[in-house]
Length: 141
Image 1 (spheres, rainbow, N blue to C red):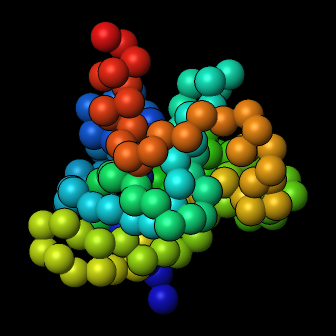
Image 2 (cartoon, helix red, strand yellow):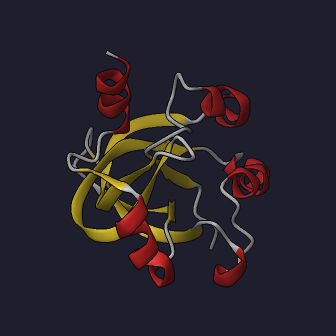
Image 3 (tube, one colour):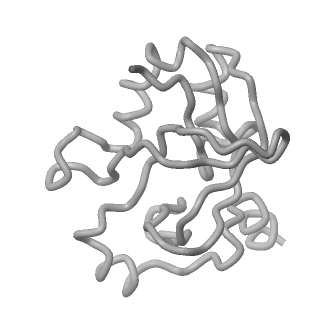
């Protein structure tokens, strides 16, 4: 079974460059959503990643049949190869809450590999509220 949903929380959010370049062309249905995890900012790279955890990640749920066509491009920018030891991020099917309907659905989500959690905890900066857009606004003011 193919899942035609993708939960994003960082550089693929609507209005940001990666959304405009990769996602916008498939005209997905877009819903405010949240998932579980702990968000970290990678200062040397300038983007967020999520490690499995009990925090709340604020983001957007995309739904589109065309996601299957663009997922290889998104895998490439997320440096996901399908092999954890050779990937920067991993892609998993996770529970995501659609905040507009209250429904919990399954969606693809990119996560930091648990095998590299110790490195992330030493080198990343926790974004406690899990809100990348708020973090960017605060950082730029």
